Length: 394
Image (tube, rainbow, N blue to C red):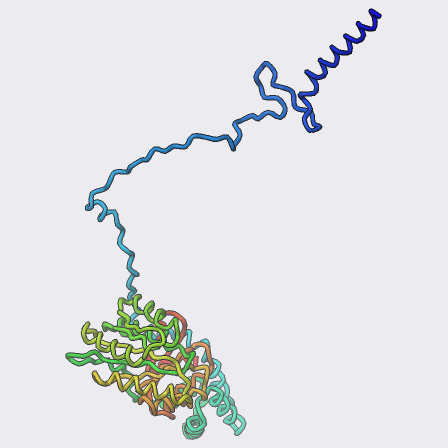
């Protein structure tokens, strides 16, 4: 019996020990990690640093910065940087400087003509080759016939055979076909109380706005003060583009609301130019197809509204040289509506159709005054017949 009590006591003590030491470490079926050792180092599962979600005290102190005197504030303000004004290249001799660029695209025609003329026997087939070369270059049927007839006569009468003599004859005939006596000067002479007014017109995609900006550089390079009128109110970026061109040379741009009346913008531009005392006002107009009667009538209205303040001194028609003979149909209609006084041929460096210069002048009786020979800001040059033919013949 005594042994039974002793065994019972041992079981009770063991149960108490298990309840005290083991059960508190088991919660939800998992064993809790041991408590930290007496060296106060973290045990397994203890945080080695303060948990990130532990609440911390916030700093509520307000730091007040000292106020600067008003004079120092004014000095601290940085003025807006104004766009740098560029100095365009002088126009004198500009076409000569761009001669190599023109020659790259035109010399094929020159070499072809000189090669045929240098043949020992110039039979009908040879003259047919010369005629085909001129027609391919968009010289036009009438002008081509005249040039070939004169070349046949001169080579037969003069009996020339050397390359230098043939080149000289061909150059003389081409220069004569370009009508070098035409007045190619830009009429920018202004009156005592009004500026000269230049109006830029043409079909879509010929580069009118860019040409207008480059023309502003031409006038500034020649010592003129310029104001630009953004009368192309239908193309959203036209006014911004023109204003960018003007800011480069220090020229003011007058613009109106998008979709507004272009005649009103042109009128305001001339009025503002008169008040500012500038030498010339350039009016950029919206591109329009020559067969759209309503748009052509609107162009006529723009010119009539401008002329309420004075005459339009120049009406420049911008033609894309790559369109060739198709450009002549466009040019005829514009000439009838707004009395074109000069032609600007763009993209002449990227085409072998330089003969369009001859045909457009003969068909319209209007001189080519400026030619575009690249995308550079100063790649618009006054036209010179002798330099052009020299580049044409390589």
